[in-house]
Image 1: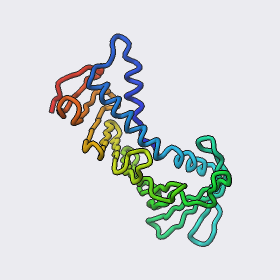
Image 2 (image 1 turned 90 degrees about the vertical axis):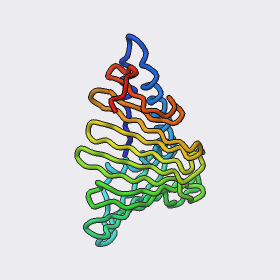
Image 3 (image 1 turned 45 degrees about the vertical axis):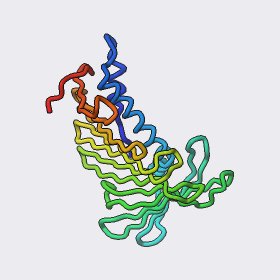
Image 4 (image 1 turned 135 degrees about the horizontal axis):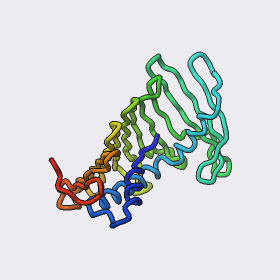
Length: 224
């Protein structure tokens, strides 16, 4: 599960004749802030979960499977136990536990959640391994052509308590909405991955007016 805004950075790097103008650059910076928050909440869980894709599960009983393996994240080695319980033909319940004797983790619950049977939609709740408290909740839904992800921060460990980020990709247009609760601000960034035209709406930029850029990343009048 990854929110990808790489086209914006790539487009900026390709502008050689002159720098991209202010609307695009402001959007690029805001997208970077959103990415930092996402990575702070999801980088380690994603690294540990990815390793499970190369491991085989063992049947525990008629409706439960278990993966056990060792992997590394952020320079630390972890023993991992991932369980999947099939509650029905429509829902799977997941629990992810980690062990690291040096850090004092012994089969500690890292995240729990549910997904549909094909893993095309679901929700994860992540926990802080030190305190056991909720860190964030991630919900997602995907089809062959569309993806939507929403992150809600439940912890103040990175000063982002209550913030949320939603990401939608319809196959052509990517949209990110970042809600900063501490500042009572909502920022929306949207761009076409084929033409690289897009816009930003942010209360602390251009008096909150919709601000657009063209295919050359230059400021332009918004059509609507």
